[in-house]
Amino acid sequence: MNVGELLYPLPSVKCCVTENLTVYPFKNNKPNVDIYSHVGHLASEWVNIISEDDDNLLTELIYWNERIR
Image (cartoon, rainbow, N blue to C red; front, side, top):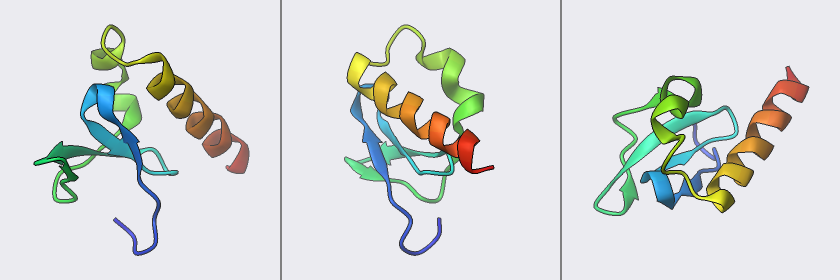
């Protein structure tokens, strides 16, 4: 994780995500920065459990990440 990088909580899937779509799981209600993945590797696991609010946030992050590239 980079210093100053913003973390956006996704409580329905028990993790947080950065603007670069790196995902960190929660451990004791805090991001575990020692373990990470990319949102693309986890999306299929989240289909039936992600809340509408978390899905909307993630959709926005993906949209802006693609526009910046």
